[in-house]
Length: 143
Picture 1 (cartoon, helix red, strand yellow):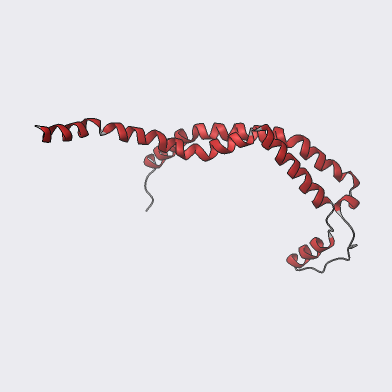
Picture 2 (picture 1 turned 45 degrees about the vertical axis):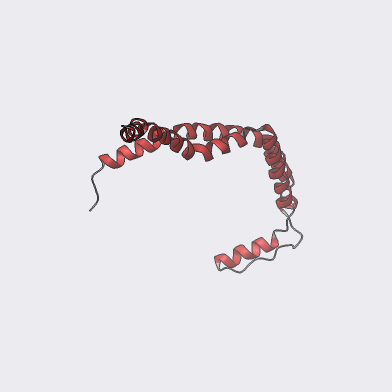
């Protein structure tokens, strides 16, 4: 009798682990998007990345453009024009400094929006995957 109870109990509860595995699988597929969404909506993270982007922009504005012009000409197979070795984007366009300020000011809002979009995509991932599978089944096979 004991020999029959264990297999019967195992069969009775077998569907439970299978059903439990399906939900985490769908959740684990969307986990990277959900994590990214959470990070992008974090005000501290937004502030850090805005400062980083603003600093990188400032550095790029002050880089000499002569080496870049030379490399671009070489890639195009053309002769490079003489460019003042001290010329920078900031010197060429004095108002360019406003770009880094705008990046610092607008990056948090952009990250918030991107985080919200990533969160929505994470929530939609299982439905989108199911839709793709249905479409694949509905389309005729290629030969």
